[in-house]
Length: 339
Ligand SMILES: [Zn+2]
Image 1 (cartoon, rainbow, N blue to C red):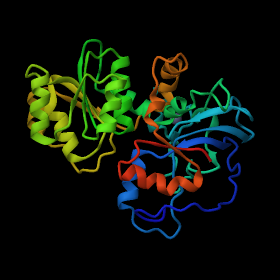
Image 2 (image 1 turned 90 degrees about the horizontal axis):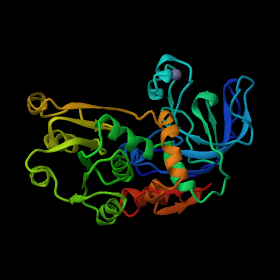
Image 3 (image 1 turned 180 degrees about the vertical axis):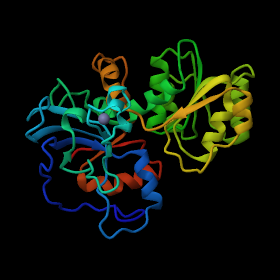
């Protein structure tokens, strides 16, 4: 990506092992993320460009001398952040705060919308799968890179538990995975807040019990009505705008929690007073998806959850620029890339 709206497919030198802890992964499937749409909307022109993409499944082609658990030929999930797997934050299951963290497709780090890429700290970062490259579950497995783990993180931070009333703000792929996660954790009422009919229809199929298409005050009113005037126990904030965050705080019931996973594009969270007087907890951040793979993978393998349903278009590498356009125009929910 060279600037807002300027995505190009270019030949780049093949990635090589630089550090002895690296692996080279040949990408078998990748995708375009809702968070890629932020720079697609507002990136300043760059001479060198930024290699994009942070979600992938691929085959390990080469490993450095110090890589011990990941082997050549392994089919692996690549979480959106690299982590060493050994520091205290990794041990605590917060790999996105690893002392060696790196975010693929960001700040000069190579991206996964490519034929291959270099992965730092292969042992800590990559998660080997026991299925074949052409498994029918591949779209769902690919969501372990980001969106399913991120939706799950929103639900965990929002402290979703059995019988809860929950709201999901945002009908993008993360919000839809948030619906799956809330249902999986036992929520009884799941209110999807979104206005794109194709997405809210899918949300209902995935477990949403109610849909609120309004925004702002009208939306807050409607959630209150749907919850007997109390508000919801947990809010999964999956957008990252000032308005979506304000709505999230407003619809939380006293003692409730907001899990934020939408990258914040605002300087401060509003409604400090209601947040205080309602004892609402607001938390969240980049999901440690590496930690959640272990928990979510079995449910994908046995068909309990089908997060791969968020993909509604597949393109090859040449189709990536149009994939960005389609997602930005809300013509596609999430685009898979098969290099
Ligand atoms: Zn670490």
